[in-house]
Image 1: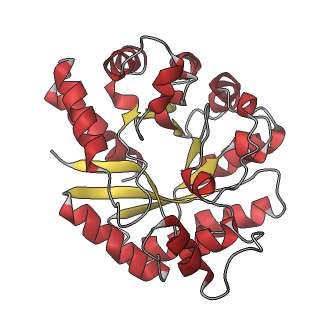
Image 2: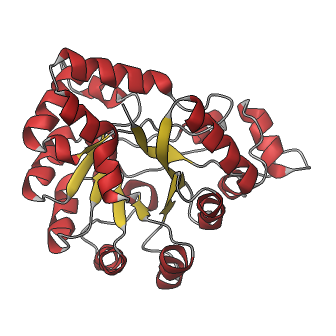
Length: 298
C-alpha cells in the first residue's frame, strides 16, 4: 500500500527560537540546541539537514510523501527550504494568524514565491472567530492560488509548550467546525482540512462536512479526544466519518513532529487495523492512506 501522511510538523531550529523567544531563564548558547536539550530531542540543525532527515525517515517507513507544517507564524521559510530541497516528497503548509500584521504580504510570499500549498489556522490559539472577515480573506487568497486551508478545531494541546512549562491560554470556544462551515461554503473550490476528526467537536465536524463537500477530515494523532465522548471508540469514529464524509474525504495523518521519535508508525498500524476490523475495502483504504492526498496535492 502506498502511504502519504497529511499531517507532520517541521519542528525547525527557527520554530524553537520563536516559540521560546520570551524565555529569559534559558542558558546562553545555541538557542535551538538548548531548548532541544531541555526537551530530550535531537537538535534540528539547519532546515536542509532536517529535510534530509525527514526524507530518510519517510524512506525507512515506505512513505511516499508528507505534509510538513511550519508550526509557528514566522517559520514559513524553514518549510520552504525543506520543500525546495525535496519537492517530490514534501508538501509545505504554514501557520498564519489572520489578525496579525502583513498578512497579505506573508500569504503572497509563502504561496507565490515559496510555493507552499496550505495555510494553517488555529483560531483558539490566536483568538479570532472563524466567521471573521479576515478569515474570509485567507480563503479568498487560497482560492486564487489553489491552496488548501487547514483549520484546527476542538481541543488544542501543544506538547512542547507543556514540556517547557509554558502557559497555553487557548479559547477552545473559537474552534467550532460549525463556524468554519459558513466560510467553507463560500469557497467551494478550496480544500478545507479539519485535523483529528474535529478533536472533540466530532459531531460538529461531521455536520460541517455534510454541509460542505470541500471539507475533509484528517485522521492524525492518538485521537485522545475520544475520552470526552463516553463509550466512543476509534472504530465507531471511522464508521461514522465514512458514513457522512465517505472515503474520498478522509486523509491519513500521524501528527509526527520531532526526532529521535520520528515518524509515528504505531499510528498507521492502529488505523490500518481499525479499517480492516470494520471491513473497509482495500480500494477505500487506498484513498484514505494515499489517493486523496495525491489528488489534492498532485
